[in-house]
Image 1 (cartoon, rainbow, N blue to C red):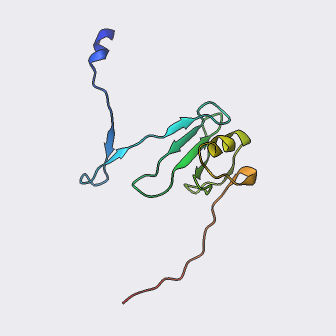
Image 2: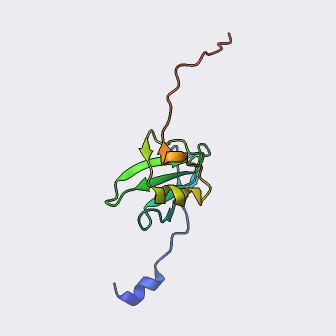
Length: 117
C-alpha cells in the first residue's frame, strides 16, 4: 500500500461491546492525565452503568500502583499510597484523596439479611 492510499482508510469513531450479542454498550476509553510522570494516570468512567469514576495510577515503568474511586476509596481491590504529585493531580480533577494520600478499602463482615418467604 502506498502512503497516499492511507487517507482513504475508514476511521473508527466508536466501539460497541456486548456480553450477550443482544445488548450493546459504547466503549469509552479513559482520559490520560499527568501526575508524577507524563500521562501516568488514566481516569475511567463507570462501566456498565455501575460504579464510580475512577483512576488507574501507574508508576515509572508502567506498573499499576493502584486504582482510586472519585470518592477516595479503593477500586479493583487495590491499596496504595499515592505520591504527592499524583494525589494533587487527582484532587485537581475532583477526586477526594485522604490526608497522607492513603487509598484503601475495608472489607465488611457479613451483613444480616432479611429473607422473605
